[in-house]
Amino acid sequence: MKKLSITVVVVLFVGVLLVGNAVAVPIQWSLADGGNDHWYDYVASVSLWGEANTQAQTLSLNGFDGHLATVTSVEENSFIWDNLSSSFSNSRGYVWLGGYQTQVAGSTDPTANWNWVTGEEWSYTNWATAYHEPNDGGDGFENGQEDYLQYYHGGGQWNDLYNNWRSNGFVVEYETAGGPAPVPEPATMLLFGTGLVGLVGSRFRKNKK
Image 1 (tube, rainbow, N blue to C red):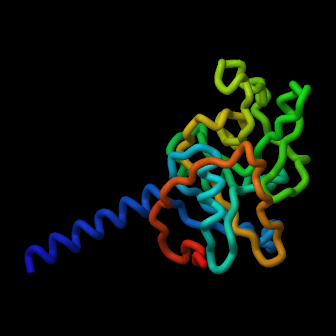
Image 2 (cartoon, rainbow, N blue to C red; image 1 turned 180 degrees about the horizontal axis):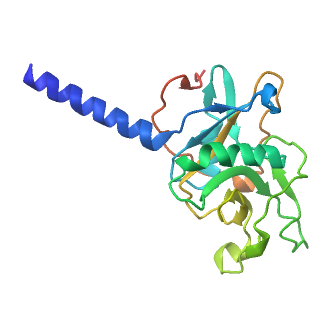
């Protein structure tokens, strides 16, 4: 009985760690509140952008498929930041979002050729302009090509970053029925996936056929 009790305690302790470190509490931006009825969650998973993108697409919530969050309005950006940022492991963010930049020959504009993983229109932005974002780095990494989007400077402001950076986590968005599906990444951005974190509640891996 004593050994059994110790085992139960250990299992419960590990479960608490997984819940605390893996995910926040999913929140819905309801139509009644002027939202889109989508659900959002923070997943604490140290990962490259490509790994986070792959992982987000393996998650589902109440039958809704996930993808890295696509932030297409000031209201949506504020909703995500105001409700989830307290769960981020750093006050400045370091959290991946579902934006990426396509490299076009001859283009040197860090603001050009940005896309959402769902194929939605890229119109709204919230770059941290006080920090000269986006700026393609100029720090010697990946030839100054910073092609991936993250929260970074606090207050819900955006930063462009090179993929070799491992961010602390990512925001996943769950579409309701009829929402856009993630589009395939360009072949140059396919990366190795990582092991999935433990999922809790109604979060499940998609069934593999």
